[in-house]
Length: 255
Image 1: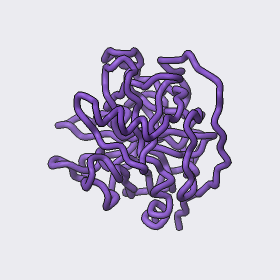
Image 2: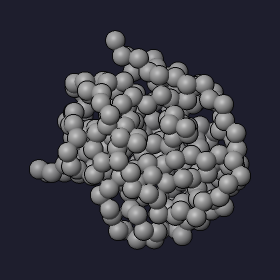
Image 3: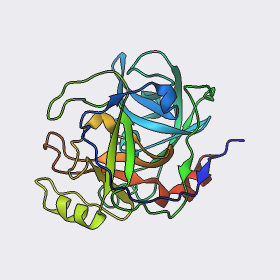
Image 4: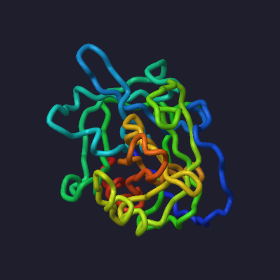
């Protein structure tokens, strides 16, 4: 029997700042719950999304990565325990996705998916279950969270480093985020089920390869990157699905 680890968090806003805009390369053993989600394109498998391990048979990611006209479970697989994009680690294929029923009703609201794998992941120093934040816990503005993923590493460019990176971001006021995206060139809907985060005093450019990449607070999974604005000079925050609004659904689904 697989169990999801729930955590009740005591959180407090922080007043520190960070000048790091690129991120720091890390080994997967630092964040062993992160996985690469690979998409089959012809004869090749390409990392296009990320996610987090919640049981040895399940990961959680965004529904955007497990939906669409060309989607089928056979065209997705997961690479766990790998620090570099597309190299080493353990590969397990996707059996079934369970996208939240909110998804598709209001822009990216409910952009979350529990994904069952065809076989179990073997836990080790580089492959581990992520505890998830408890239901209904709201993060205050100004809280430092850590984003981990394999996206681009140079602002405003398409330069890619295959290493795993972490970057400190800070949660932002959702009401301001709503207005920011309402008047964007390509408007998006921000709801209470989302977390907005950016660099200290700024936003953060979005990279499509970071779809589903985790936001952690004190090593607890609190968010999954859902959308943002690429190449915008950090004007707009990235927007993540807030795990705490779906924690009970996750635990019921990942069985």
